Image 1 (cartoon, rainbow, N blue to C red):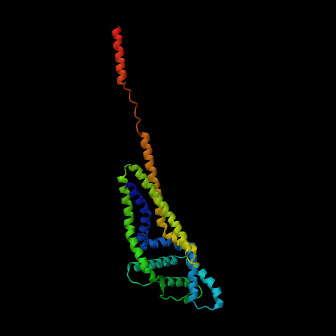
Image 2 (cartoon, rainbow, N blue to C red):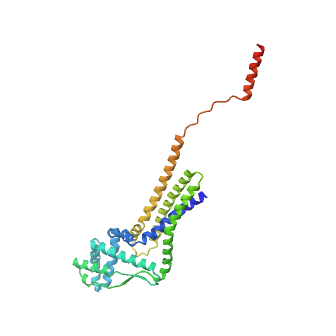
Image 3 (spheres, rainbow, N blue to C red):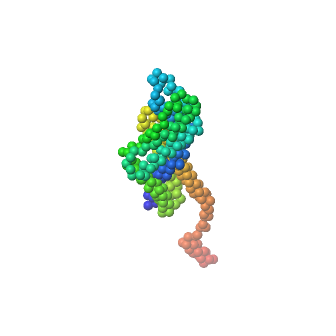
Length: 302
C-alpha cells in the first residue's frame, strides 16, 4: 500500500502542476498580460508585428500599384520604429488584455458565438504615432471598429469542457498528490527509504514535465502554418510556459535535495552508532564439571 500511494503521488504531481498552471495561471488576466508584456521588446515579435501591421495598412490605404512597391517598405520601417516606443508597449498590453478578457468570457459563458476582439483603439494609437512621425499617408489609415475573430464558435464547446475540467483538476490533483505522498510515507515500514523514494519520484516528475514542455514546443512550432513567423511563435510559447518551466526545475531540485539529505542522514546515523563490545566468554558447563572432577581425583590421591 505504501509503494502504491507513493507511485500514485509521483504520477499525479506533473499533471497537477500542469492543470494548476492552466487553471490559475493562464486563466488569470493579470498574470497573462504580465507574461506577455516582455514580448513587446522581443526583436522577433517586433518584426512579426511590423510585417503584419504594415501589410494591413497597405491593404487599407488606396495606393496605386506603381507606388505600392515604393511605399510598402517605408510603411513597414515606420511601423518597426513604432514598435520601439512606449505607445506600442501600451497598445500591446491593451490588445492582449482585450483578447484574454474576450476568450475568458466566452469560456465561462454558454453562448455559442465566435469570440471577437475590437482592436480599433490599437489601430488608432498606431495611426496617431505614424502621423506624429510625419509618415506619408498615415492620416488616411481608417480606424474602423472591426471584429477580429479569435476563436470560432464551433470550437467553443470542446474548449469550454476542457476549461472546466482543468478548473477542477487544477485544485484536486495537487492535493491528491500531497495526500498520497504523506499516506505512503506514514504507512511505510522504513519511512526513511519511503521518503527517499518519494523525493526521487518528485525529481523524476519534474524532469518529465520539463521534457513534455520541450516536446510540446517542437510540436507546436511544427504544426503552425508557413506564413506564421516561427521565431515570434517560439517567443510567445516560451513566455506562456515560463512559470511551468520554473516549476519543473523546482520539483527536480527539491526532489534531489530531499533525497540527498535523507541519504546523508542515514549515512551519518550509521557512522555515529556505537560499536557493541565483545561479551566475555562463559565456560561450558561440561568443561567445568570435568575440571571439578579432575581436581577431586587429585585431592583423593594426595
